Image 1 (cartoon, rainbow, N blue to C red):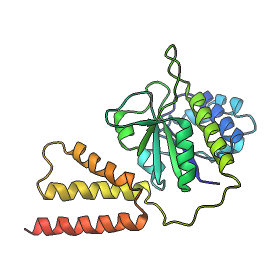
Image 2 (cartoon, one colour; image 1 turned 135 degrees about the horizontal axis):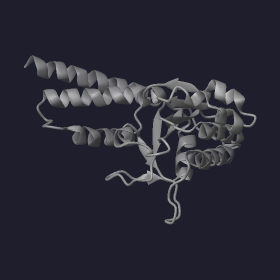
Image 3 (cartoon, rainbow, N blue to C red; image 1 turned 180 degrees about the horizontal axis):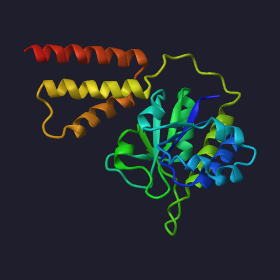
Length: 238
C-alpha cells in the first residue's frame, strides 16, 4: 500500500473528525495529521460518537502546529480548494488519486477548516491543487464529505492498480523538506546576485514550478542545494 496522508488544518468540529476517522476506515486509510487544533476539539464527544469502529484511528491521529511539520516527509502535497488561483490548475479527486498511486511514494492531501478552507499562504505551500466539481446551486461540501470523496477515489485507484506489474524501482523523490530547502536556496542566491527586487516571491515560485514539474529526486535536490550554496558564497565574496 502506498503511504497516503490526510492533513486537516485548524479543524473546528469534533463531529467531522469522528466522521473522517470512519471514512478512513471504510477506505483503508490510516495516516492522518491535525494541524493547530483547538485543544478541546480532540476530546469532544462527537469524535467517538461518529467514529464507528474507528477508535484506533482517533488514538493514532498526530497533532502538529504547522503545515510544514505535517508534510515534511511527503514527496507530493495537494491542497484542496474551491477557489481559482491564477496560474495554477486544479486536479479532480480521481486525477489526484491516479497520479498519487502512480508516483508510488508518500503524498499528502490537505484540507482547510470548515469555515474558510485553506488560506493563500497554505495553498502556496502545496505542490498541486485539487477541487471537487459540484453543482452551482451548492458548490461547497462539508469537510468530512470532502474527505469521503477523496478517500473513495484513492481506494478505487489502489484497487485498479492491484494485479498490474510493479513499476521498475526508481530513485526516491525529494520530499517537501528538501523542496523547501531548494526554494530557500534559490531565493538566497538570486538575492545575492541582485536578481530579486522588492517582493521576489513570484519569480521564485515560477522557478520552483519548473523544477517541480521535473519531479526531482533526493539526489538531484541535494545537488541543486550544494550548487546554489556554492554560488551564493562566491557572490558574497565579490
